[in-house]
Length: 126
Image (cartoon, rainbow, N blue to C red; front, side, top):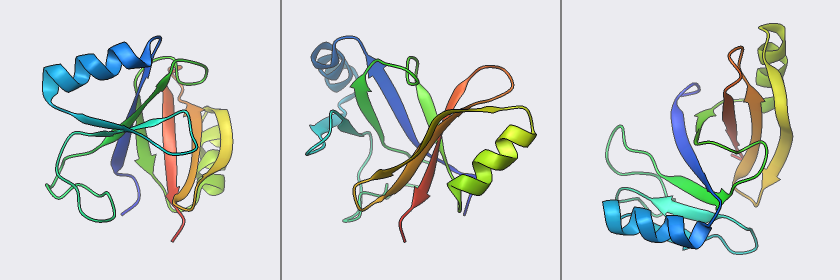
């Protein structure tokens, strides 16, 4: 179902310190994603595809703070990132980072809404 919030990202000036904080504060499992400067954040039990087993729960990521991700970001699932970015522009938003491939999993992009918030988009490869 498109339009669901499916991921979050937490940027950090010091990723090691942030990892330690969130692991100790909430028991999150944070693991480096091979080949990327990115860590996967597990907040809840996941299935073999990495999808949360509990309704309403989401997992996320952690990365070094840099534009466009300079504050926490939510990511919304869409069927077609290109079409979504076009509609976002028509509605007054702007593209913050163009569509990019994320391994074999899918595609991501970032936009700024009409209020200046950076929000992520996700399109599964399937």
